[in-house]
Length: 306
Image 1 (tube, helix red, strand yellow):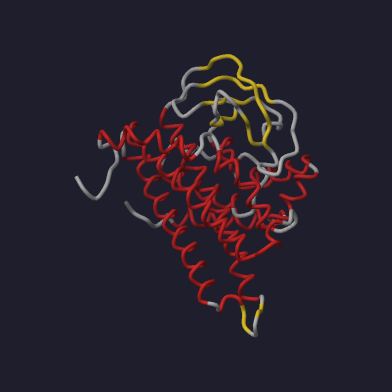
Image 2 (cartoon, rainbow, N blue to C red):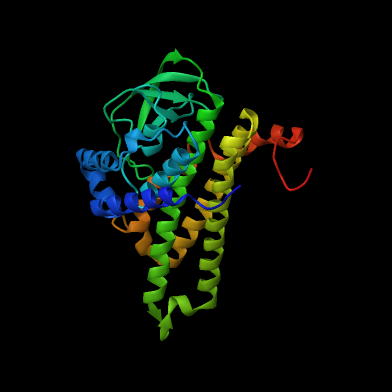
């Protein structure tokens, strides 16, 4: 595995970050919560980048470009279903759901949706009306419609992996906000960042995110080199690791910010709310872990040891 991204993919990532920053970052996401029509500006930004021409199923470079596009969108809490657009089935967005209790992030947008569970069983989804919610401000309830052909395991794995790249981008941006805060806020004559306990907390969160980044790189590479069964196991393991890292990092962010981090207007609060669907859906961490038990028994995990 080559852990370095190709130069053209890095250049595309930089262009995406610049274009998304022009929208206004988390402040734009907060405005979109209040006026959902503003999301058309996010769609326009993606169109400017040529995101609709990316085929993350085609080859390694396009998959990596899609991964970093998702990372850049997470870094500004872009109010748009980027992963679901990248993995369209025909003209329909593909989302991963719990078919027993389906909810769709940005499900109120125009267009049809296909919902699949982690086994690839898929149905058309009829989405309902938006409901105000603190956790996942754009989550929309859905009802299961006509059965559709099963989604390939490869697509399910790609959806899980690209979702973690978006999650990583949001967590990195949230932690950066906290690092800036503890570097500027003073207490007892010195900045918060000079206290050893604060430094340890920041270091732990940083190590957690760097570990998640390396695991995301490895799992993305495995999408191109492993068997279907191995890709599925790797992708679920990555999503579980992402959920665990998110809980730990967001807890650190809120602890170091104090009450201000829970104010709706604060950037970390915006990131927290918008990342909740990626942390909690399509299945809880507990159910994801249960799915991995058979793989542990059969040795489907690729590790350093035989």
